[in-house]
Image (cartoon, rainbow, N blue to C red; front, side, top):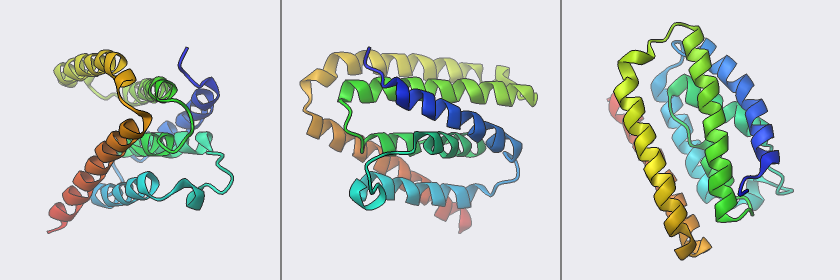
Length: 178
């Protein structure tokens, strides 16, 4: 009930293109350049006021799906969708529900794409199980706590988490070039 289906459908359509392109060049991309580029883009999108980069406040979620899923498929890291979604005007319940569905759709597409190329998921099954349990626990806790947090505090906390992820990516890129 708390999902913006228009955003989800546009994002999922773009994700299909992003995963096809991303998986096709997965091994050819320089990781450090992508880490640096992704970190800079995340910082810009999360902190630069949307009026500067969204002239009419209409976010091209199809394109966001392409780029987010491409970067997630090629590098194994996402974050673009979260940075864009924080600048929408939807409620925090709709924000978390829509993010959850969009990320689920992109992950399903990536699993199918990697599997079609023979990726051995069995080796990573313990990691997948732990990540799934932690994700479900986080969603459960968030559903019970988020109504106690103001929209302003929620968005600041969200921006802070994305910022930490971006700075970590930037640090990893620079350290590996040294």
